[in-house]
Image (cartoon, rainbow, N blue to C red; front, side, top):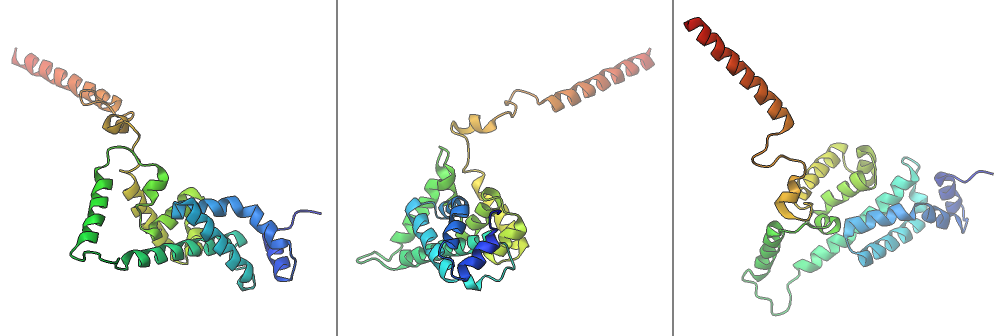
Length: 226
């Protein structure tokens, strides 16, 4: 007898099979964990979010209608749990602290952090770079570029239009590009680019052709003057 499909496992779980959901989770655990970790950036937060998501999925499995793949539905639950956690943390961060100087101290701290990120010479690892993105952009990029979902599937998971996913990913990539520099500064960042005094192969070839034309033109002018 062949292995049960995801849909069959989900149906068995809803019907009361005590082992079906556990098998479903074991099957997709690694990808679900990777998405949670990349979205939140902290292993403890990711573990808590994944646990919350799986409890929710376990209890709400009867709400699955089969309109999308089971993995898409599970990832939606995980991402929503991550986004909820980020939003709760954001609310806590905006609550005034006791004896806090409200004359701009907090905004000054945030500005200093942004400046530190912008001025940092060393490269950031991927997790730290992802943490600088707005959470909606981060979630879209993680699903498409790291989890391997298509734009359409990512749109289903995040319950937005495909065009919104494309826009969020494009903005996220643009923000990450200057942060994901190789270690070693500007010289390393240039990679295979020609040095300031060098000429790229294509440019060198074109320059040689231009020089040849110039020489032929001069010979023609000299010949006509004789």
